[in-house]
Length: 486
Image 1 (cartoon, one colour):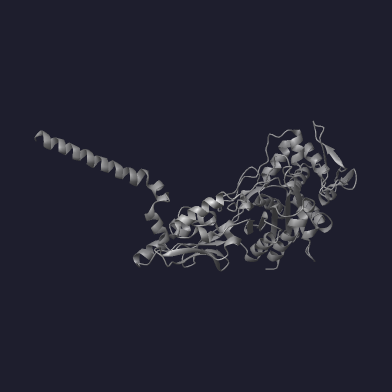
Image 2 (image 1 turned 90 degrees about the vertical axis):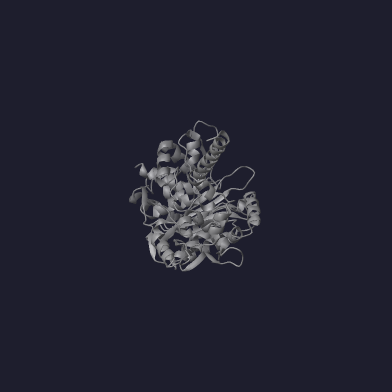
């Protein structure tokens, strides 16, 4: 072989090898990243050419795909967008959030549980369809939660979570301000990108599901955890005499902390039940200091702090009880201040655990996974994740919470003819903003069907009118009634 032919042959061989290496690299090394790249038009076309499965609340499809009148076959639509957006999330050409994200493989039809369905579609030459997802949400409870948030004055920020105590099923999850996921599902990709940038830069943070993604000081609702730790220590019960009075001096400090109303809680020595009824800061500051950081942290973690438990909805923030607090900080933690932070979901889990005899159930929002023909492929089984307190401690806390609703700060949650258990909270924020209002409750107290947590992060309410009972109590009451009367 002469030299020119040999050079050309070697050059062609090098080109062939380079092409082979590049193909191998693209198909095996970069395959996943290219598939997930929002600029990949082939993936976009395939995504919008398949009928995505529905997200169901009861018999209603709150998210579904319908035939489109443009270059793509299907358009994603949301029937009650603002009310359910924190749960459904959105489905767009570049990303998904909420259930649209956590259940994407099912909804897109790629889940292994849909193998038979895909095979049948292939053999019958039918267009492939995605599976359906049934949520645990109770429509009436969600309506009540959303209406309560909408009724708050001004451009409010807040969230509501309702759980079924015995199972962990999420019966309601609402957050405000919110957004319209229909706009994210638009086939005008430039407009979707602009919307994403606009909402991500919005100081009101409408894309955050505050029910699970916002952590704030839980204030006096955390006194339930402090009371639980005190009773679990074996040194206290509901009728034990505890410190009352006007003010408490923090250990190793000259700082004193008073009660919310500057009162004396009914005397220098009061029962623990009375302390919870009037939400006496002095009592729970004293108890937290006596119990110490380790006991308080152990109790908080038993309820779910310092971990996450929601597995089928992305975005859960970790509620925190730091283990490295000093004595003054530990005392302040007893009233839900210092470095203690919680999501509304976490505080709903505290109330639900008390209602459930001390058992903390894993919360979940996906009830069933269904094939396109609605046959059930999978169903979530309730799971206990910890024993936070003994059943006897839960009974005592329930009695204390019932007294707090019957004749205490939580009276706005009263339901005629029924015992309701509840606790208010008003958490201090920075000096330049009003406090946060919290409310937790469950009902009926003797046979709990629903536990609720309400957070009002901000609203057009004068600072002296902000209180967990005043703002959160009526919302919790309406959600509980919706579940009980269904």
